[in-house]
Length: 261
Ligand code: PEP
Image (tube, rainbow, N blue to C red):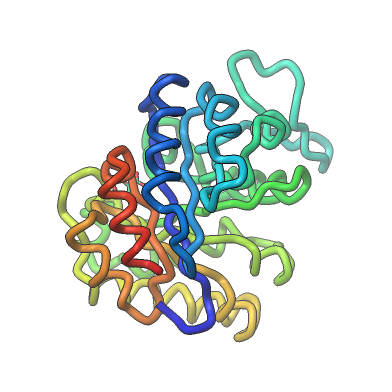
């Protein structure tokens, strides 16, 4: 954690919780983190639960985020609604109460073919409609074993942030999530995570200058839990966490939030 960046802990509920379950979990989370200062908190339920969770979180210190949306680019213009059956656009999630959106999660890259160029388009759409993005990057186990971690993450960051002005980049949050650590119980060591976070910050300095790079929060994600959060969050360039499994248990999530405070 740094003395200048406010830590940010976000819960990614993935494809879990009905609206009823989500409202209950959100209420438990809000109660468990009530009054905890010095840390920013968000939960990201599925689309169908956003409208149910928004009123539960109103007036609390927990913000609401989504996990994805659809946008296309036609003739240089972003198209955020229209004939895309089954899809949900960014204005819809914003109007449902979301302030944040996770973009480019490895599960979306792996199972739904998301690319850095697509994430770049979604970042631009976020700022068009008034959402803030959490941009996920991270290497596969085979890439780490081949010594390609820094190269892979660098390509992702360059692609996702291509052409963005520094004042836009500054407001984005990056989540470094080694794919081999997601949902596996196998966490990166604090040193492994710090090494990649520092590399990302060096790259951001090259892309946007030192002041912007120093301002951008970089979360760690990948089996962060109540037991290992404090050690990870103690690292100089780890500015919070994107939490999957442990975010579904309010007491565990609250312990992580308090570790970030
Ligand atoms: C995630 O999906 O973003 C994640 C970090 O999951 P988990 O905490 O379960 O590894």
